[in-house]
Length: 325
Ligand SMILES: [Fe+2]
Ligand SMILES: [Fe+2]
Image (cartoon, rainbow, N blue to C red; front, side, top):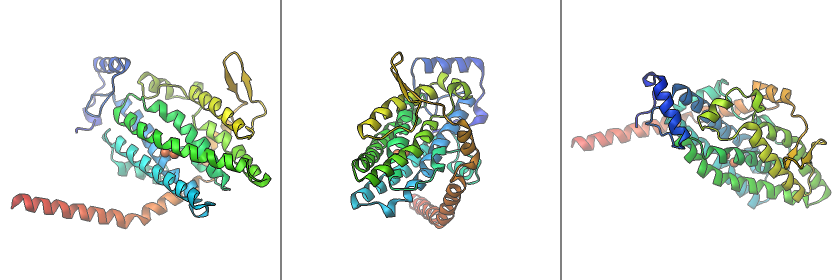
């Protein structure tokens, strides 16, 4: 495969027009196909942020594996956290088809220049937070990723198909934790409500700024990388989740929440965008802690990378010797 190298990519208008016609016709763009440099860059940005989010997303939940209340819960949580590592790997691989090196991307994460989803900069204070993350954070991820499974770039879209299946399991295990706690003792129910109170607004922020404040959205929609806008996706998530909260007798922490007959949507009060930008810019409750944990894990894994490289070199030598013989 010849990855799209930037230097071979000259965005002449005729080629861009032909490319946009393919997108408009619903064709999938594959790694060997010509693409505008800007499309390639937008995908690298989006996909690497996504891969980093999967990997950093293991940290808040990994924190609770040793304290899961039963063996069954522990097994489910372990499986979920492992799945997230796999999601990160699929998407890093997908990003490499765009001609970018994974080590470069990981370096950007470790030195703090890459972004990942801000939701993972919030702390997990109680077991109910594991329920709230599965239900709300994975729930929001499903809404977003179901749309991305129809993205115009083939490797990204195909990675999303498998990932969404696993996210459904994540969401269900989270919702089941919340349902169990909500139907439990008064203290358990308070714990579930407290988790919903803390995770509700950050999960709505996961869809990004309002469409009017989202500089990349128009281009991403035009090129079929995204099929729906941030606000459309957020509204879909709200409509789904309000009904689920009612089903398990928990209260959405928004006094202004109301059903609008005309649009058939649940309308919410204002989102605190100051908080959103504060966390995006690195000043959330756990930004420093998350990055420190990733750097530590990277350093601790150094010997594995050295051993893997030595093994690969040994295999290559053995192969070339046997070919020569
Ligand atoms: Fe995931
Ligand atoms: Fe997940």
